[in-house]
Amino acid sequence: MASGKCFRYLIFVLTSVCVASVKIGLSGVETPPGPAMFVLGDSSVDCGDNNPFNGLFHKNLSRFPCNGSDTTLLPQLLAKRMKLPYTTPFYSQNGSIDRILGGLNFGSAEASILSPRSRNYQSLNQQLRQAFETIQLLQLQLGESTANAFINSSIFYLSFGKDDFTDFFHNNSLGNSGFDFAHILVEQMTNGVRSLYASNVRKIVCAGVVPLGCAPQALLLKSGGNGVRKACLDDVNKVVSYYNRRLEGNIAGMDRQLGDARVVFCDVYEGVMEFIDHPDKYGIKDVRNACCGVVRDGKVSGCVSTEMACQEASTHVWWDLQNPTPAVNSLLAQSAWSSPSLCRPFSLKQLF
Image (cartoon, rainbow, N blue to C red; front, side):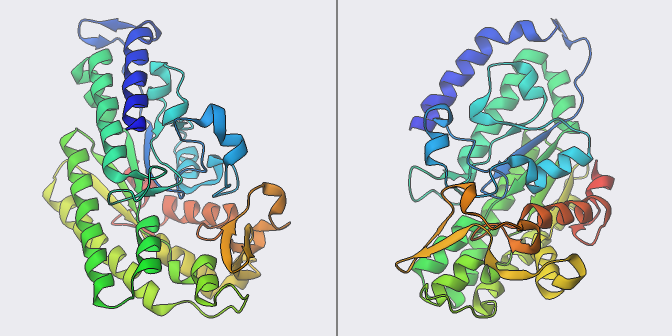
């Protein structure tokens, strides 16, 4: 409810004050804007900056779900390689159409594909609704043809699923139900991609889910928080891997069906497993422990300040309990940009 009110207020502000920031004629702007990146997802795309109360509460209540800066996350690293502007957090806009034309990050550090379990979470559908209303605003301000050309050329990056699986693994025993749950998530993501296509989006990147069975949170919880570290949890990874394979298969089908669209799947699962299986090749010394994570009284939590983090994050695979370090993200971005083995059926350089 609060999120909807905040967005309606934002739309009012934008439509009231931003017209003067762009030169508009009867047929749209005189100079069509260049492409941008629009991002939807969870803590893999947002460090906690994107919430409606950012100015009042963020600095004191941030749990630092990443290293405190969105610039070290995969979509922002890719945008830099594409020479695209830094995407502005959706809730921190200043009401300028220029900010929208530079790309927006609708992602939230706590986000799920399905309906959120608490008000802190944002669902895939909530973020899609914000994206659709932003597209409509662009059409209103720029003219339909100019806005559609801009949306056609821009890249929409989606990264969801981590929070859905984490909640499921904590609250359910694994088995066939895990695969059934993954199937539901895949269908929801597929519907989301189709909805973006219906709104004139033509370049879409879907990131898979990292190997959560190897993440510090799963390992610590499995050991009861007593510090006993085990190998990756195969039953967890099998379900996550199944989700990734099904999502990639659906994306491949859509790419063939939607002739003028280009939909790419980025296999961050296999990318992270490469660093876990062959750490020496990349200067990594710790593949299990979080650089920024603590265990107290059997409970697991991330850092409440960056001062609590380890000194050499670049030697770790995991920054916090579920997210890779900036060093790993940088390596993933390099591979996603140039190699079709991580992002398929073609690299993001080819997509762009």
